[in-house]
Image (tube, rainbow, N blue to C red):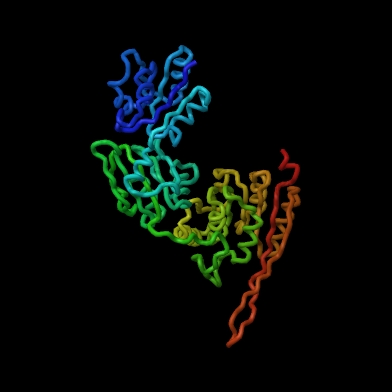
Length: 430
């Protein structure tokens, strides 16, 4: 049975191919590609060659190719650049099998863009938003938005190369950065219509300058921070790092308690975390930094505290954190099941919140609760017992130094009880 050849092509058409690759196209019985690539080789294909447009649907391509191979015909699929770099080859190999596919790569458009910039690209992370229109980034967007994976990569990488699309354009990337207060911290270079007569290269410009600019198709974005900066600590920030509502010394989970609570949450890099009764947001925001591929869903009923949380989110430029202003448990049914839950305030709904937490937690998930009153602590323990949950309790008593004349004394902070709980062994095994 013949092989399906997946050939990488560029917009310079015939000039960008080796003689052997061009011969495969000339002898193809079935030629599959998008309209632009098919037109590049219209004069090269034989008269009885059947041409198919990719826009008819990816799902049809393995059917077309499979039928051609079964009939002993030569099938060629045209892809842009390197077919195994965010290209169609991975999909076809998964459907047809590696044994029936032969990939002939070309220089990728990303290589071409870096070459035009004279910029080494071995450290670049390659991303793609080419494809269906995912819409503009919204302030309330989360991990289900099509631009979210790109936004998270931007936060983690120093150099990105991005395949774009007609709708998911360089301007859309710039507007997303602007909406999360990062547009002045990143710069973008756009290489448009490479190897075509109207080829242009923008050079690196602040993302804020590209919010409303239009670029010719196709184009590639190279993105990097304007200035190399040390990343902030993952957790354990000073209490003063956060905006706080201050009737006394600040409504915030103090640093020492925060550190122990985060440790008991047993976070992973991709954990889904709930922060209930978020207060100033300190626990949830440090959890977000500890879980770069995860997401934190927080809820706070007090409008003044909610405003402060938004200020802190903007201060720390957190993009994997979402605040809901309201009283739990209302709205928790709309959140994905969590790997960890922190309850800093219950608003008088402690028992139902514990029930929901134990019902929704992943099998090895952790529920951590902070209390400063005996009544709430005892209520939590009784409810955990009623649910046959596994739990343990510790008390933290923190003393901090304070000046007195030219000396130092210790001043006690309010004692805090920390309860860590998990689902019962029986319910976890179900």
